[in-house]
Image 1 (cartoon, rainbow, N blue to C red):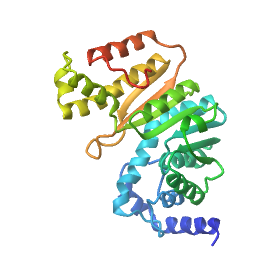
Image 2: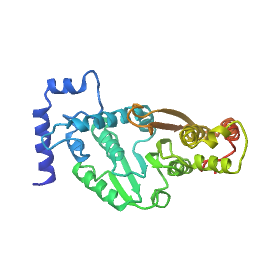
Image 3: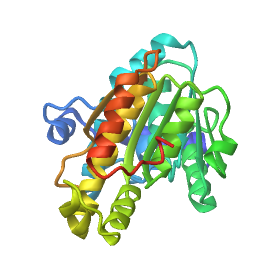
Image 4: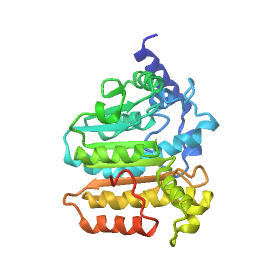
Amino acid sequence: MTRQRWAEQLDARAREHWTDERLAQLLGDKRPVISPREGVVLLRALGLARDDASLPPAQVRKYFQINHMVALLGPALRELRARHASIRLLDAGCGRSYLTLLLAWCARHVWKHPLEVIGIDRDADVIAEAKRRAELAELADVVRFEVGDVAACSPADVHGVVALHACDTATCDALALGIARGADLLAVAPCCQAELARGWAELAERGATGAFARVWQTPHLRRETAADVTDAMRVELLRAAGYDVSAMELVPHEHTRKNTLIVATRRGARDPEARAAYEALRDATGGVDIRLAR
């Protein structure tokens, strides 16, 4: 069976399965960007839908999460479409490409706007899986995947940089790359943030004193607090680089602690007051810089 024939049959099953009644039961008053009736080929490629076009109960939460993610990025993406006749996005540390393929599918089927996405990851196995998914979703003509270092493989002219759950300082690397490329949009969901906690642990080992000493000295508090302070520092540094920035909840808190989404839109002039705010926060918490500052 050709891929086109497979997609046509899956679309037919979706129209049959997803009656108005079933859609109402699933969605309630929600209006997701990706409907299981129209977007079933993408959902099957992502492993969320079955061959009969239904959504397994175990995947329903993930289905709503990916729609929520696109909705959160909606205002920034609308602005990006208004600025550029054709958009090029870089997905740094793309993994198995949920976000990459979501954005490409929405650009083609919802926004009707030319878009190219480049996904880069060091893991050859996940890139191979991402390429397979792109072929299944009929998006291989607008999505390109590469194995390697993001800075070395990324093009010079990108309009947006996204990074979902890039571990520890990899989020800072993605943000720094986007700033250096003059990207209009930066969107990151940080993960496994340990850099600041390591710096604070060194302060505790040296017996340093200060208002934050109790946090430095307590491993649990050090780890949990460092993640939030790191994100606050990133927000100020992005503002200092000329971006309007929002930090928001990515998914409901009960699902994961790693649920912050930082979205930044480039406005122009650098803001020295924001840089001073970063330095004040850094000094108040122990004087440890983060990678993005360096």
